[in-house]
Amino acid sequence: MTAQNFIPKPYTKTIENGSVTWQAPSNIALVKYWGKKENQIPANPSISFTLSGCNTKTTLTYSKKDTNNTFSFDVYLSGEKQDSFKPKIETFFKRIEIYMPFLKDFHFKIETENTFPHSSGIASSASGMSALALCLMDLERLLSDAEISNNYFGQKASFLARLGSGSACRSIEGSLVAWGEHHDISESSNLFGVKYPFEVHDNFKDYQDTILLVDKGEKQVSSSVGHGLMHNHPFAEQRFKQAHQNLSALITIFKTGNLEAFIKIVESEALTLHAMMMTSMPYFILMKPNTLEIINKIWTYRSSTGSKLCFTLDAGANVHLLYPVNEKQEVLEFINNELVVYCQNGHYICDQIGLGANKID
Ligand code: PMV
Image 1: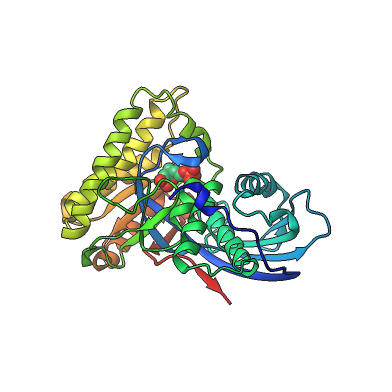
Image 2: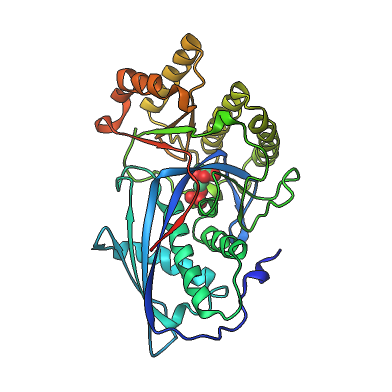
């Protein structure tokens, strides 16, 4: 499969106007994507849990225009016009235009809303870009005479979402999604995310993710800048190798349900991501003092209770607490008694592993 496969045959149908709505989830990486080559090709493979509660719902309303020499669209977030989102979407449209040659034929109204609080420090780019990519795929389906299989639909949606924001390609379909070529997963691709194809132990069923909002501010460093810092990074090659090894190890862990081994990989991945940022030039510390307080509390809690609670981090200060569903009550008590003080305004979000995006009729 190459990118060329996603260039469609000339469209045969015409459509004047209409609208479509998709809801797409956020995801949390276990093996982190950090570093990319040209065209949003990941420098290493990654894998994530799809979340069920943190979603973006996007309605794309399209109306045919008379001229087709520019992109024309308006963006609304929770009913309010958001011109500040336009440059990112314009860049996205430019990148995908060759794969979606109808984009300049329509005026689009893009209405989007997140189920998680805006400015919670939770990135909406993964869920936002995947929801938009799915809406566009729906429109392509209407314009094409040829049958578009569900498999192609999902793959191309993921392929497009990746061009909007890399990790967004893991927010289309499946509870566990791998992205980036890996020798143990023959169907894996650098171009799109794939549903994890192997056995997953019941220990991971309904796995919980509680997101502690330590810092709700704007990201200190954008992820594009972060990925860029992996170029000429002194530890880059070793890091990319490690991601391959950690993904291989996770395949066994998912099969056996070995949660001790899972914790080691997941926490090490989170700390390695941050270590890459601390050792790049320029260097950044993305954690806040409260991030570290939480990590230390988790380690103490785990050693005193035998719990299988662990943490992971995005490229920011918030902490994702991952734990099996059978520990839900105890962990929530622990959060309320000991961790909530480290969250900004005491805020946290309870989520769990989900299935992927869906169309809203
Ligand atoms: O999709 P981007 O370019 O915002 O990068 C996301 C990178 C991490 O969230 C830090 C890791 C990952 O794999 O999701």
